[in-house]
Amino acid sequence: MDNNKLISEVKKNISQYKKILLAFSGGLDSTVLLHLLVQLRNKYLNFELRAVHINHELNINSNIWVNYCKKQCFFLKVPLIIKKVKINKNLGGIEAAARNARYTAFNLILKTHEILITAQHLDDQSETFFLALKRGSGISGLSSMALKREFGNNILLRPLINFTHKSLKIYAKKNKLSWINDDSNKNLRFDRNFLRLQILPLLNCRWPYFSSSVARSANFCAEQKQLLNELLIDKLNNLLETDNSLCINGLMKYSLICRFALLRHWCIYNHVTPPSYKQLQNIFKEVIFSRIDAQPCLRLGSYQIRRFQNRLYLLYKMENLYNISLNWSRKLPLILPDKLGTLISNQGNFCLRAPNFMQSVNIRFNAKGHFHIIGRTHSRSIKKIWQELHLPPWLRNRIPLIYYDNQLIAAINIFICKEGQILDKKKSWCVHWKKNNLK
Image (cartoon, rainbow, N blue to C red; front, side, top):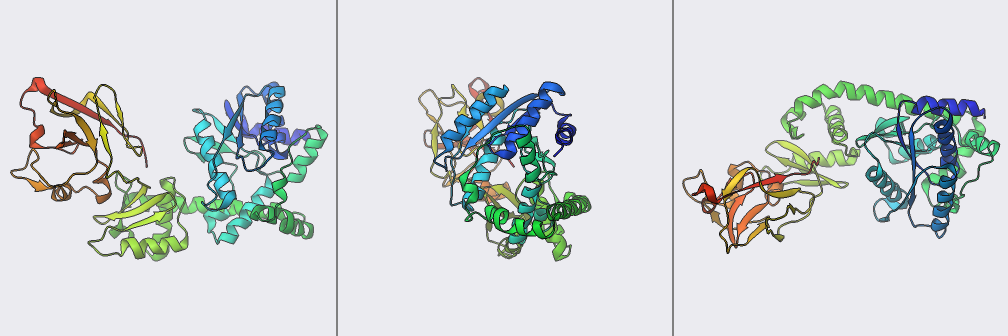
C-alpha cells in the first residue's frame, strides 16, 4: 500500500471539516485511521481532533483495552473520551445491541458541527451487504454503508470505505503501529465473523476483486435508492400534514408497491428504521383496515404506528402516565415525565385563576367525571370533551392537567374549567409548557 495514496484519500474526504470525533476501538482499522488523522492534523490540515472509546464491558480484557487506548491517545496528543455502555442482549442479539449502544453514545458525545469518523473498510462493506441479503433486504439495505451520511444533526464519515483490510494491515506494518486483537473476532457464533473468516476468504480467493464488485453493487443500490427517493418525495409531501401524519385515503390511490415504498419513505423521513415487508403488510392489516371504532397500534421497534381520523401517525413508544401525580410548588420549573417537556410558572399566554393560599397545585394526566369548561354552556364527560376537541386517543393521557387540591382546573393549552376562570386579573396565573422537540 502506498502511504501517500491512503493519506491523500483521507485528506480529500475530511478537508472541509473543522471538528472531528474518531470512534477508536484500538483495533487495527481505527488505529490506522487515528495515525492518518494525526498526521493530517499535524502537517496539512487545521482541525480539532477528539477520540471516543466505547467500553461495552463484554470482554474480560475491556479495561486493558481502555488503558491501551488512553496511552495511544496521550502519546499522539488526542483528547480521549471513555464511555461505558450497557448492552441489552435481548434486543436483536449482542451484535445489534452493542452497535445501537455505541451509536447512541456517539450521538450524545458529538458537539455541534463535529463529524463522527469511523474506520469501516471495503471488506466491512461486503459483510454488511451479505448480512442485508440474509435479512432479505431491498435496495435500502443492500446499499450498505455510504462514504458519508447524516447522523442526527451531524455527519458520519467513513474515509476508509474504499480500502481493503489487507491494505490497512500493510500500512500499519510499514508504520510500525501496534493495535488490540479482540479474541471475540474469532467467534463464529457472530454472523459477521462467520462471513469474515469462513465465506469471504473463499470468494475473494476465487475472484480476487470480489469485494470491490460487491462495493459497486452496493453503490448501484444506493443510487437507485436516491432516485426512488427523488421520485417519491413529491407524492409523500402531498400526503403529509404539518404534524407528519400520513393521509390514508391519499395513500390508497396508489398501487400496492407504491404504497409500501411511500410508507418506507415516510419512516425514513422521520428518522425511523423502515419496516420489513411483513411489517408493511401488518400496517395495512392491523392498522389501516382495522374496525372504524378501533384504536389500532402496531409496534415498530421503539416506535408505534397508530390511526386517527383517516391518518397514520408515527410515534415514539410512550410510557403509561395514568397514575402519575406531581406536586408543584411553582417556584421552580417542573420537569414532566417521558420527555414531555417542562412547565414554567408565570410565563406564556395560558392564563387561569391563581390557586388560593391554602390550595396545593399538582399535575396529573388523567381525569374522570363531567366538567364544565369555559366556552361551553353545560358540563360534559371528559371523554366527550376530548372527542369534541379532536384530540387523538394516545394524547389524552399525555396532556398535563392542573389540579387545585383534587379539583380539575385546566388542561394546559387545551381548556380551562369554570373553576379556573379568572374573575380578578390581579389573581391570575400564567403557565408555559415548553415541549421537547420529539418526532
